[in-house]
Length: 377
Image (cartoon, rainbow, N blue to C red; front, side):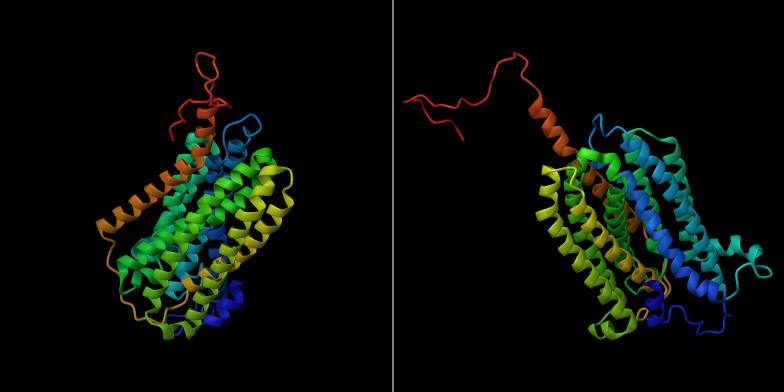
């Protein structure tokens, strides 16, 4: 999906300004490696999220161990892809071919000087720390904290690209940060459920039902933040007819399809899965279709990151302390809400399942004697 989109927008074309041609490896490789980065980051976050969605039980005891092992692998891919994006991004900015004469000597200093490259490097370090943490952590609490850190490691990417150069810098960067958080939780959670379904076993219905609530919140966050970010970068309705605007419309159509699929999942698939946990085929079929649509949306997003919006932009100022605190607070609130919502059904079940201390039956009588007052409501 990224290749035809790159041709449509001109993201794979040779540079228009005379900075030198970085070559086809950079022009075509950068959006493709970006897709690998996005999918690996989302998968890592989703695998750590599943630990929260699945309760404690004998059959489910293997979930944290398997999820951590997979998260270590996907986190490693995420870190490597972020490193490759940093190298190719420098070649693209400098207009030189990778590993040409003097390339390696200029790379360390120049990466820290350009903000888009700097945030990629920071994200790569964060991804490496997540992979290391997943390799040594097996407790549920530790993996939940690691999942929160993985979401935080994604957020620096909001300060790179055209959003950071927008005339409404704070709105563009803030909305993109929430957009990224919603996407990785939503896409990653679905991918993780599909990958771990043999391990989750009979608890699959409960896990999918809890994830459905999380996905609904992510859908709202992605729709609102994505619409706000697109409006800031396009600026006017006529911009929707540009190649950039057509990709925005394509992403919007994908979002609508995913919303319909989520509604179908909640109304038809989840009740069937709760009744028969072994009947995974309807869930797997619908989840596969959703991941295909998500993959197309991620491909269009990778091309949008390399395409210039029609709205005029200027160089960005450093992010303000207020903006950083706002994004951090939103991430904390979102993580707490997800954890509380996912753990609530299990706590309520334990509370009501606990027998009374005196051993007597305190349930409401089945009959009410004649003349007795009605029970209080």
